[in-house]
Image 1 (cartoon, one colour):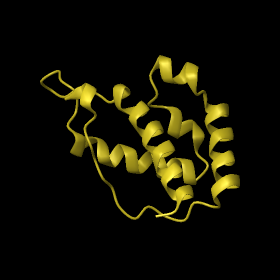
Image 2 (cartoon, helix red, strand yellow):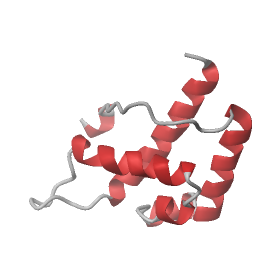
Image 3 (cartoon, one colour):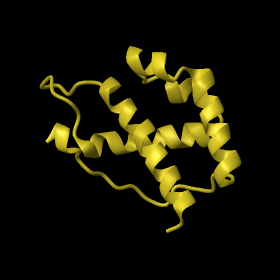
Image 4 (cartoon, one colour):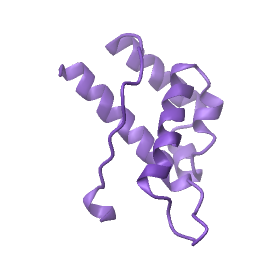
Length: 102
């Protein structure tokens, strides 16, 4: 795997992780399971690649909206496209739990 692809994956993982706190609580009041977040993450990348930054940032919580507002998200995506080339497609998903959430 090239360094460019690794960097892209890391940046996307960070963006996707930032969406998780805004996910709706489960009926039991807890956080959703990772498998419930996969469709959200996939949709997020679809929204970014489709240029729908309003939808992509809609699930951000207040802290994330302050750190990465819609216009900044659009600029970041454009920078990634310039540096790494055009996004082609999603080929799969992978989940991992961070040590701090274990």
